[in-house]
Length: 173
Image 1: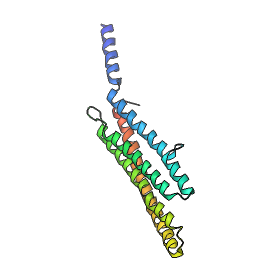
Image 2: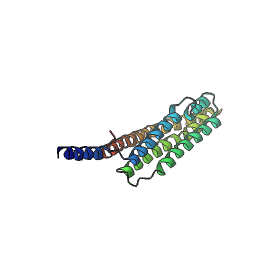
Image 3: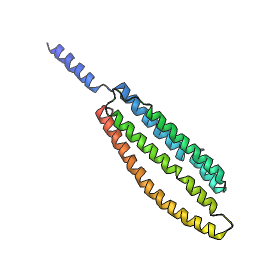
């Protein structure tokens, strides 16, 4: 009798502590995308580094090509997350939405750099009045970029909160 009770308790413990394979895979894909984004933005030889090198050399066309690579990288991340199945994964839809919102915000913020690059190029115009207007416009764009950074930070916080909830609900911690 005691042995049967022990077996039942053991089985219940095992069943309640089991982690959903789907949830683990879902979380792993989300985590991998964070690493991909990191490599785009700060990885050695990444698109962001390429853009900065181009700007230093005043290669504005090259910088725009690098921004295209950044955009494509974030589009790939977003497509990967959009393709994740959420059926049978608790809080999967919430985490998926938060991740898509975050990476979309980050992509949109980085895309705004196209305008900054155009103004930087105009800042080197031989017409001093045009160059002065370009510098003024660049300051305005920087202010807008600051606002966008705050919005992306908020989306990042929502993503990390959703990830914590996801791990808690799916018993992944």
